[in-house]
Image 1 (tube, rainbow, N blue to C red):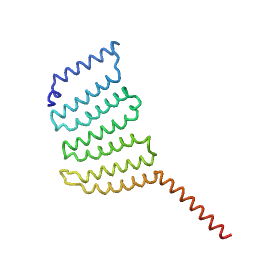
Image 2: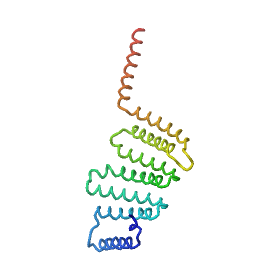
Image 3: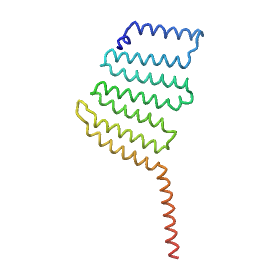
Image 4: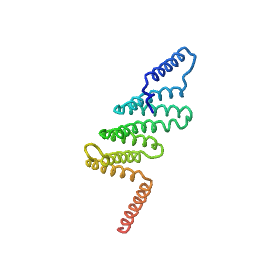
Length: 212
């Protein structure tokens, strides 16, 4: 189905077209807009994906392929929907990088290590997307929970070496620390803490007044 992507004729023609576009821009005959840059960058991503589809042992090509397409999507969104471009940019690019590593594992299960950078990048992407809605401690807590979930997945998925039960230890530690940060940053904790301080202060005043 994707054999044409690996055709030398196809990519030869693509390079000629792209080179011609750059020449036309140099001579001032056309102006490269954001959408055209998005198409060019996406074409680079498709080129790397074609390397993978032509021979699936080239799993490494998934990383630059998916990443370049993610960048192209962000450029296109920024051009068509400027208000969303800045908010979604980090989420889409970091999420794309994370997805590329997850695909590397799914293609070849011996690449279990790819789960770790994949989970880290997906967690960072989620934090970038939510940072404007959450306080700093909460985003830090979510990031640690994401890392904990990454190690938990690593402990559950099949690998050539068998299930890696050791990953449950960092998974549990990271999840607990993340939950603590979430609780500390939650509004309910602030309210309870404030009320607790008022009650404690009132108790101290009451005890001192009774002694007088």
